[in-house]
Image 1 (cartoon, rainbow, N blue to C red):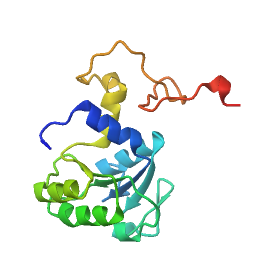
Image 2 (image 1 turned 180 degrees about the vertical axis):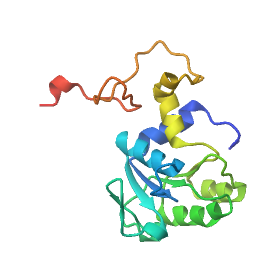
Image 3 (image 1 turned 120 degrees about the vertical axis):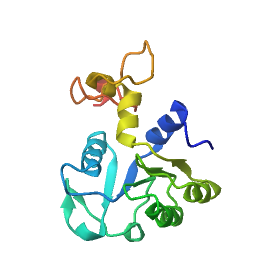
Image 4 (image 1 turned 30 degrees about the vertical axis):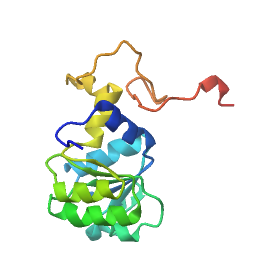
Length: 179
């Protein structure tokens, strides 16, 4: 796959099927990008497992921090890497062992060798992108910040039911039939 550009459908499908994200390099520092990506993805309904050996056993935004991917016992759909490109090598190998569906390398992180290994093992790979930004772009939320999403649509945005400024990619159930 050409990792310099991804079709919207590729990113959209990954985000739709993902339920659980292991975030390697999650930080308790509120000004770090991993902190606000963790907060945003939790707000969008994802189960996010923070992974950071220095914070293992503590809670971050209500989530128990795990020391290593190898310590995770539940199924993981996506491994989101907030570490440098060299560290992505070993993390990708752990994601393959974990049987994750996707390896996602954050902005500024690319490792072609790791991507090839992951794709050979059947995983989807995204490099040099942020799931928070992609979710906001594809749902239309990013336009509220004055950012061009690159998408034109006459479709009404999908509200997540948590206020008028909370959009989603997932179809919502009809509230009248939730009885």
